[in-house]
Image (tube, rainbow, N blue to C red; front, side):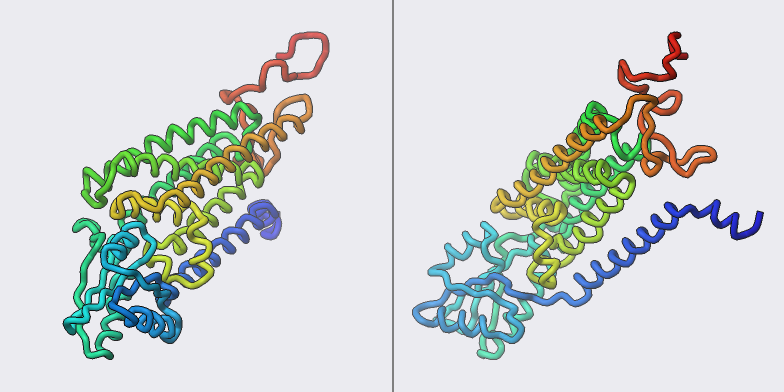
Length: 380
């Protein structure tokens, strides 16, 4: 056998396509992370101005006209309203002008991430210096001492999401990417749900009571963790039910390649480029990171929208998984249950593998499914 023949046997066309797909995923990973995080700069950061008389409106107009549009200012009547809107996550900072002195106050919330806080501080210090005024800080929602950079919520969510798609991937590797029928799809979803409940609790306990990295409700974080893990797991099962093994790569594309850099974790959303700032809140990592920070530092405010997004991923993933399993069962011809080659892990002398119930020791076909030729005798 020639070397070329050896290469053809070692690298099948399907394997070559998968390698090309992995290369594409790698390049997208690099482009996404570097594109989102290489040059953070503020864009349309929501800030408020509290000042007496017409000064507030005039200052807001000046802030709106800063080069590059870093701020999206609005005026508020008093400090109480500014603090309320910050805790509701309607604004990211507020400048309180003291007409009786040369020192003004900047309300910040370090719980939303130290990068945004330091960026806003530098920007407003420059603005105040131009007016020959000084600035003092008032942290409305301070980050925990064990969460100095405000990143613990993001890393917690990343861990939950990784667990979600790895659980679904393991179920695919062990018994075929596409479940053989609706009953087995239901079993996979139940396993994913049980895993989500356990993973959500353990993650919340580690970051809360054990490490003290995140304050806030343990029950709230547990519920968020369970929903996040199941949403990602159900989405991964849905991708697999449609695309087979390739669905695992698509889940990584959504969760890791697109989701992590756009989540507002390493750099909060106002510091990201337009594309990542637009997609982040709609993806599981971004939605869950927002809710985790709200639970930890903002009294659980402003979480309805992100929770609906996570619930939508969970619901759609569940429905698609069940529908595809039902269609797959109807399309299967009578006879021994065999999955397409792309769904079967490799076996001896085969680049494919099997689906559920096609090897000794695996689940057998459903009752009534023929297991051999009809010769008048009972099949062996």
